[in-house]
Image 1: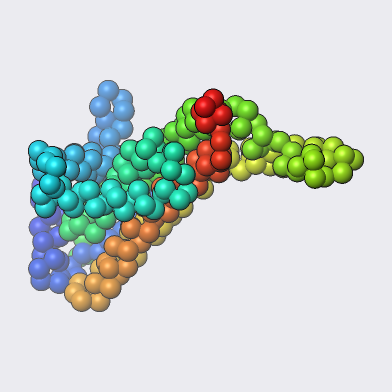
Image 2 (image 1 turned 120 degrees about the vertical axis):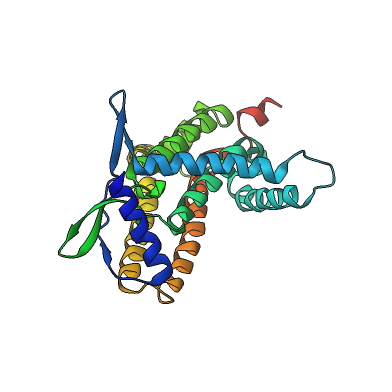
Length: 290
């Protein structure tokens, strides 16, 4: 507790006086383990994620309150955000898929966006435990770390997105369309010479195998893209704040503010594209049934 109060005091000294009496250790690629509960490690990124997630629930509840037919200010703000996301994903997934995929994508967007922005809050990376080295205090264990700078968090988000992708393509496209999209002969049999048409079958089978490998790597690319950008931003802000306590880091905070929006948008758009590539076809099992 004494070490925590010391680090907290140094943080506020730096925040208000611009003192350079402490320094940040290099941001580690993994989170710090703060404690264990029943053998399960509790990390600083987990604590931050829980607090931000609770904050999202309370914020939405506070803004919406009791929904009305004529939206009040808070409800109108939430609805305008939702409508913007709907307009963004509708051309990608198709009109018939917007309703089922919208809750997933809007939830991921808000969750990722606020977790990206959590790295801009005062105290992130400056409250924790450390040690004195020749008169300079180094923070070696941080109490607060943005959730999306932890690869475990971004990988979990990517896996959630891919499991949802599997559900949507089997529920709204069906095995036959999935098989044709991956391995089927895309040439028209009536417009293609018969010899060429059958020659294309093994080629499309090989293309399908390559596509399966690509799909298997999607969780890796999704998680590493988000993690790499947010982890790099955390390092940038820490480095600039060490060198300059005032004014100079402000443009970098604005830059990371914009990066947070862009990365959240890219994440949900990629999942929307994955869904739309198979589900956004004219026809499908549901439509053919009619």
